[in-house]
Image 1 (cartoon, rainbow, N blue to C red):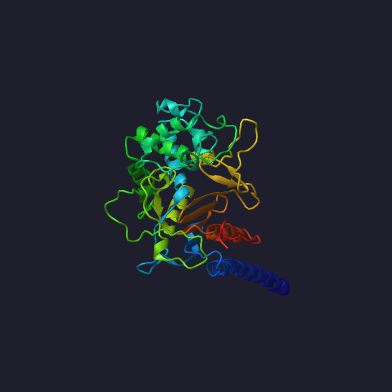
Image 2: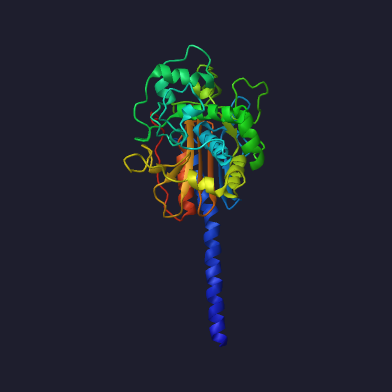
Length: 384
């Protein structure tokens, strides 16, 4: 009997020891991955990373400068422009209005914005990039002759011409659609888009240092990273900073971009969703449901192994749980937020450059959390 108890105790001890070693190895593997990426001269990582497991931060780090001129370094508190990662906030706001009964996902946009010329396009179509509407790059091939505002979106679409495809028939990324959703939020709520996001998402989620950026902001934010862009292999300099262009939709139009946040605040956002603080479980289940096209196929991104849901992407491979994500990329901005809905794990990568570090760390951090092998990502296109 004593021998049996000793053997049982030894087995339990070994199991707990192996489990502890495995748990300890994850931060070590994340740190190894981070240093591999942050020292890679092709990637030139310049930003922050954060990995959390059920609201507990298990790894965080930062590299490079938020302001090269002043030699101010990036830290976990640095605030970054999110580019298209901003879209998840717009989608969350829309779902809140649906919850309140103010709108329905399958309502045509024309019901609320009568000057919108295409009656078959619904709110759901806009959220899931299957409206057929063009993207900024297609509408603004040439520089606008005047400073842009969200009120310019419908006239620009009218001038551009009909959608390239019928709504619901194919996936085609459209920031124009999310600009229209911001206009809808303002129309229904009676608040400006920045005011709505602040009151109904940032405050209840505890995002104390996040906001919608306006190019006309009077008070500069000293903790917001300056964006830098260069295709040269040389080190970034202050001269590589992005200059404000009021004729650019990427720098002026809210809804598809212009959200500012820190890694800590984005974790608060992710945890607020896990806890159903800012959106019910039922609404989130609808957001994370893969969109079906009219031919019965799943809507799929054309550049990644990801299906399209309502405001989020969903990994096709769900062997480790349902991973939803959204990234953002623009000149001098590269961001990603990944969330495993089964394990409640969150990975955040924010850069104030447009490098490949968000994929190299973000996707591989999720692989490490799932016990999967990491994969390689090449340098950005055009960089030698």
